[in-house]
Length: 245
Image 1: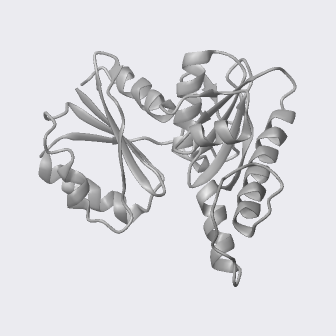
Image 2: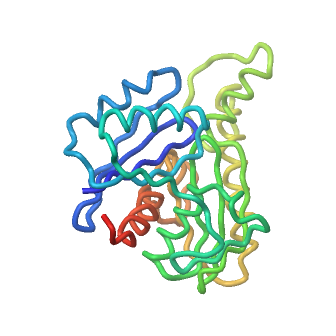
């Protein structure tokens, strides 16, 4: 059994990989809680053969987690994924390939391995990222914007005297300030996704992933697949290629 871990900006998620099967994902928001509280959720697991970690969170958090993991499972092999120039049939388009977020890279390799076609992948988390691939696995580039929750928070923190009313999250012209904020945020996200699709010169499959994927698919009525396991699928590809464990 191998443990696959995805450390994002606000949540840490994990699955186990055994006989090419992924377990159901578990997640916890790690802001403001101790590392030992996170580790407590893993104490009931059988000792993994190895750990594969995607981390875009703070470096200090990664260092503290590494120490706790070594205490929990001494001498265990821990692999931190890095973004390469090419891998798993996907070609990185960044001038400095290592600067592409490893979670975005893993989502692309996981998606391309499953769908083998031109793709527009939108990861709907704290930030919303969009990456396009052609049908040969060439990364065409991407875009990033603030996510749903971040947009809401920034408006409430940066604007005085916003009314706190009932929220319907309807995508429409609103008759109160909170719903107007919600509609504006949804319009921005929809326009962002549509702009990404317009850059594609060939038909492609739109895929939403990340914590807000199902919410945004429903609210925006998008013609899309939702696959929330793309990063783990990418991690699993790396783990399965490692024949030493």
